[in-house]
Image 1 (spheres, helix red, strand yellow):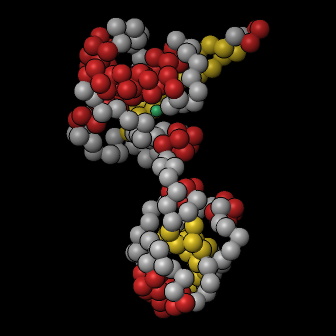
Image 2 (image 1 turned 120 degrees about the vertical axis):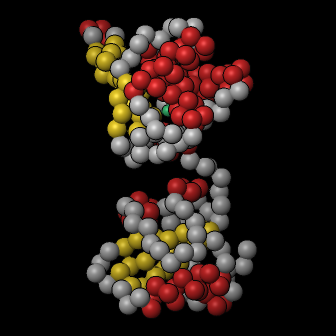
Image 3 (image 1 turned 90 degrees about the horizontal axis):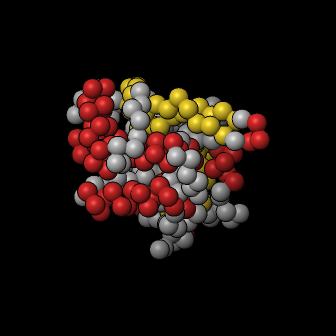
Length: 227
Ligand SMILES: [Zn+2]
């Protein structure tokens, strides 16, 4: 659906009375085309003498980049209203989507049949918090191009797919070499896993820090990829 400010303001009023006891003062709404968030609750911080912190200049921001179904838009608005509520009342939480946030989210979900999640991530910290933490084994290829660029690729642990990937990339003539690791560190869950012949460009220093010490044996035909 197409988002506009009057719609969001009307929804804010509706949910404020239905879910927040009208405890939330009106707040400016801003739209953007950002790709880094769907919704965002921003504010400024002022530190007074003796360390008292004040939050002010609240704003709810929404990106119009994604065309979301209405129910998801509503859930996003409520999500940001929870942030607003917590910050406004200076409630201490364990993290951006910590214990208090989740408690309120779960309560609204069950009382009003909503599907609010923490996955409409907004900040880097929130994206990390929303990441899947389960260890999953996959092949990580580190691709070094002849022009010096480096990238990575995550593939399922399937020998034929990995071999096909290596063949296709080497045939392109642009690749200097590819090395393979078998990794189950959940840190890699932030990247998509597929058998497509593409390369992901990411901060390689960080990537390397998460690679295990043992490189996958160069010979993929040795049957090392049996899982
Ligand atoms: Zn959030």
